[in-house]
Image 1 (cartoon, rainbow over the protein chains, first blue to last red):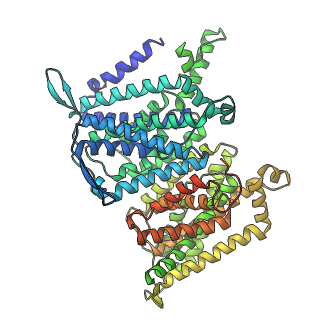
Image 2: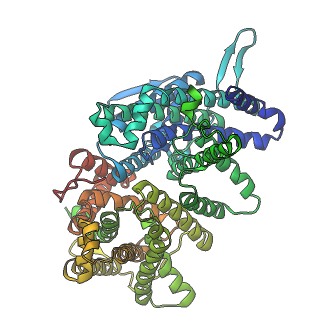
Image 3: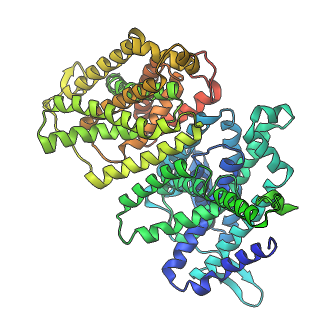
Length: 347
Length: 290
């Protein structure tokens, strides 16, 4: 069963375009998948190290802008002295550049902000996101400011025998996003079940104890921030080359809130949590938009967020796991049922 | 030189309302340990309350101002009673998520009810500005400065000279011991949240006529209030007052002499710099908690 289940989910993910013929639903599936990747990266910080980063959208936006600018090229003057001209590169390099730049920003932000914890960490991360938004808005020479970066070219892939292949139609783009998503999932799964992941969880549970047994807390936090930021940058790049236009509104705080809602609804600190939460909050607008105005939709989001904290403080996935364990115990009556958590799956 | 003087006068007026916002938040964050994301919503609600009282009920501007502050207090008490009291003892992240939810709910409620078009509040003050030498100040702005200063002094007296203030300070220092000494902690929390919210509503009601009223005006207000609290130190009213004026001066001078586009970035740069070099805030020696 434990071996079959991942294969089943993989099959479900990759056959989705066959039974979801509607182009609009496929579009929702793509944006949802992109946000799931971003939420998974946030979950690494929020769920596994316990640091609530409310500036996560900054890395998403930086990845998007870096990727788009690499692909489009730019021509800026720095401090009126240095003239930097960049000629357009293929989008696939933009993807890599987006990841690297976002990861670097994650390193810098992590180095600076992990000096403080709790509320102060949250405020520093929000400030960082707001500063990046204002830079994107005001550095018109580079980012076009509120005019937005337009006509971002699609990813191209050189295939033997078929030449340049452009990721233009929705089905192929869905496969691309799904592949990146699965890779991101595997990276996180490997990471949290490794020595590094155990150190992260240890410092979340009790930071002073973790320090006392010799875990270099700041180093692991910065590492988590870098990986998390790089992954969010990848999601941002996928987003930029999908919608083909990005403006400074990509840095709005509301996108961070969307990611946070996805993570805590699904269950922070669980591998499946961001996916479950992402699917719910990715497709909820589709259901709500038929009868509710955007303002009402957001009111429902806000109310749901409060209700989840009150009713399911651990999120949906842990609640289901607890229920499943309970149910298994009742049916087998052996008393030592296998706990349905990730450690057991590894053995 | 004239330009500089004008900037300084503008900064003083803006700073007084920032100080109100900052004091409200520093009380809530300091005493209750709650990262209050609804603070900015109370600010915009204060402005909308004045607008609604004026337009739909024809209430006089000064009366509307007082009623708006009282409604702000009541709304704050309601939020505390409904959302925060059941979560007493929960960790700071949990309450923060609830406050974010409440913030989204309130902001979109305002958007739904009043629409996205910005509103203007009419005041009885004449459009003719007061001229002192080379400086021009509108009468409305002078009124804002005076009322804000009255409220700041009032809060200061409330915290330092009354029994309620004493209980609040005791709760800030050590809530368990305060409870053992017979302080009604739950009551103190409700009072703190109501006072803080009332001050935010006051700031919104005062700045509403100066600027324009939109549903999203509270977002930056929340973040600026956080900046002020970090500058001044947790639970430090004097620090928050000074922090408010410092932020206003930096913004005003930065916008005037560096770049107006980065006006709102100044506050965030201050946050980042202060937390890196003096994480306890500028005016306190206490340890940074949390």
